[in-house]
Amino acid sequence: MVNTGSDTNYVNGPASEFELVAKANVRNTSTSSATFRWVRITNSLTANWKSAVCDVITCYSDLADSSDFTLNANEIGNIDVHFYPFNTAGTGLTRVRVFEVGNPSNSVTITFMGSTGASIADVKKPEFKLFPLPATDVLYLKSVKNLGNGHLEIYNVIGKKVLEMNFTSANQNIEIPVATLPKGNYIIRVSNGKQVVSKSFIKN
Image (tube, rainbow, N blue to C red; front, side, top):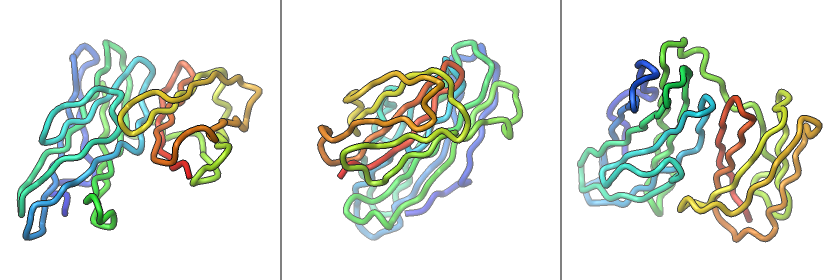
């Protein structure tokens, strides 16, 4: 599988636009059909913004962080990210990893960046780290900078919220209990009222 365009795809437009769409394509370079999975691994957005991923099947809700699709031999399929600014000036950065189901080494990672006029260079990167990875009983969120007061949510790969909690500016290291979560892949979303950032993690 190959990305038939740029590794980073940009879109700019006014905040009054309903959506800003950054587009990319992937090709199945094998000699037979294959099933692929996309996973939204980073989602850093200005507060009030949302983003959603579209593939060859459909456009998904902003809560969907993963889905499967099939490409025939040498077929090209789209992977697009739609940014929804809701009349708010700002920026968004979303990274999507696409890999062959059963053969995860056959993969590409595509970056999508949206802006309503601010410099693309102003797009903020995630300002926290997760450890240990994979997690077992407890997942720690360590803020690189003080996140202030905020809220975090954890979703499974089908977009169901499985945990949420608030945190305060006093918590530089936030302890998140994950022992009761089934093994698998999850997305954590962290919001401090100014920015919403998503990252993926694995629970063992």
